[in-house]
Amino acid sequence: MSRKSAPRSLSSRLWDSLTSIRLTVTLLLVLAVVATVGTVIPQNEPVARYLASFGPRWGPLLVRFGLHRIYDGPWLLVPVGLLSLNLLACVIRGLPEAVRRVARPFTAEAALNLPLRGRFTLPAKVNPHEAVLPLLRQELGRLRRHNSPERLVYFWESGRFRPLGPYLIHLSLFLILFGALVGKFWGVEGRLAVLTGETATEFTLSKGEGSAPLGFALRLDNFTVDYYGGTGTPREFRSDLTILQDGKEVGQTACRVNHPVTFGGLTFYQSSYGSQLAGPVRLKVCKGQDCHPLTLGQRRGENLPDGQGQVMLVRVDANYQGLGPAVLLAYRAAGESGQPQIFWISARHPELARQPRTPFHQAGPHHFTVEDLPLKFYSVFQVRRDPGVWWVYGGFLLCLPGFLLAFLRPTQRLAVVLEQSPKGHWQGRLLGASPRAREAFQERVDRLLMQLKKGTCP
Image 1 (cartoon, one colour):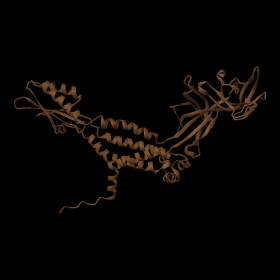
Image 2 (spheres, rainbow, N blue to C red):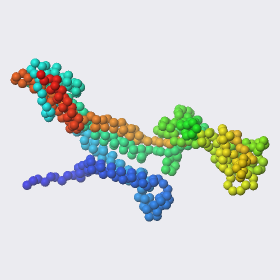
Image 3 (cartoon, rainbow, N blue to C red):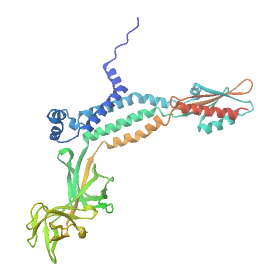
Image 4 (spheres, one colour):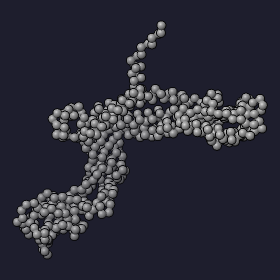
């Protein structure tokens, strides 16, 4: 009667499940489904939009089950956490054995147990060391030798550390996921807008969570923007910053696109910029040879000095169509009804302005030019504190040697054994094994065996 196996404990079954490839595949499929749902359904939108887009039946269900914020809820965080545990458990289970395999030396005794790959013969008058060693070094590079009274053994090993590769990849993925979770739960992200010459001591947290103190003061000394010629497209914008603590300057730096600044545990990324009026706009309005100054505030209509119309400043632009600062005016002549005329006037190129016209498309009585346009730039930064970023960086760095060992350095072992026969000839055997990349290994074996036979046979 066969003995029944003892029932396994709950902890043992849980450990086997946690380290199984089935769990890994299942979690990856779940994450793929979550990512697909998060792509199809707009995220982090107002609830009213989901009710309008998906109707009174499906809209409330999406909100109730958290599908409108799927990347911030358990739909994503739970499988990511389980996948992290799965990867860590695989490393704990397999890495010690891989280390023992790597630490086990490749000796001459182990080389003699390799499978036979071919045979060759050396004549008695040939020095086996001088005949075989140059060929082996040419093909294999550095190798070891073992001499004994009955045989001469040359053995070579490549990819000894290959067993560590898969576990380094597992560990790197764990570090990346762990760092992402640390940044998710303990990180801070927000937005900071500062006017030129002003100082900020706090920033606005993302997702409407209020504001948070910087822990220091940040002053925007100057903001510059360079444009591609004639296009008005920004080429680079730069913020010159001064950092102050307790009212004293402790550093000066420049923040540019793709060149963030870090201080006090916070990293500032140059996100965007804008401009706003620092005072009223001064225009010159002419009717024939009669010219008068006119001062405008934004979105406030003013009567023209001659009383023959009204004008309002609608908008300002720091670089309108690549022509520099400009103002958008709304003009209505006296006695006209309906919509006012809207036109831009460039401060630097007044000759390009589309001045107001009469109903018969002739030049109107008034001509406008910009005398003073006081603009002040403001810079917008994305502020982030991510304590998990170094874990992520470490994971990516560890991933490189892991892929190198796992896929580009297959384990190969070769040995050449020479034994002298009773007739004085040297009998040679080529031994070798490679658990992976067997076709490339067989090509190397065939090439080496051909060279040994060609270069050593009489």
